[in-house]
Structure formats: C-alpha cells, structure tokens
Length: 91
Image (cartoon, rainbow, N blue to C red; front, side, top):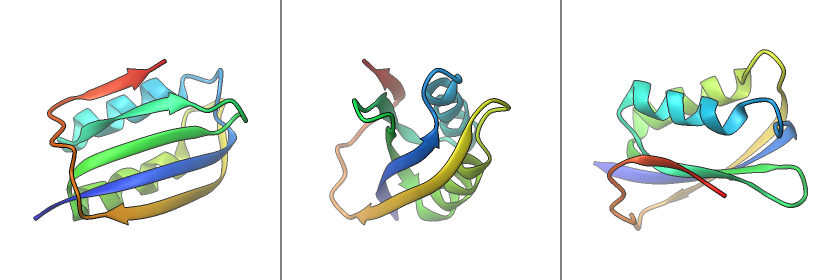
C-alpha cells in the first residue's frame, strides 16, 4: 500500500546540494515526490511510495550530503496521495 510522507528538514540543508540529494534518494528507492527550499532555511520534502522504502529514504535524509548537517526531520504521514509519478525539485 502506497503512502505519503511530508518532511520538514532542519539544519544546514540549503546551498549544500541537499534537494538534489533527496531526488537521488527517491530515484534509488523508486519513490515519487518533490523537494523545495523554505524561506526560513529548512527544506520541505514529500515522498510517495511504499512505506518501508520511504522509511529507508528518511534514514538516508538524516545522513545528507557531505556538507549538510541535519538536526531534525519532522515527519507527517498522510494517507491521501497526489498521485505523483516522478520526483522534482521545486523552486
């Protein structure tokens, strides 16, 4: 069963290739969704797909890129899907 996870990622996550990293993680696990920078310095991410694959992706998001430093990921699980078919970086 597919689910949706809505993440707000805190830390040093802008200007460190983090959104592209989330796209790579999504592709690796066959997930759809999107990521975007927020004005307050955080990154917002949505993953849609199988729950176990999303959980693995979230663990990888804590690791981040070599120059990022994730301090917290607020995760909200949602049952309503957008029906996304790809992962995009929003601007």
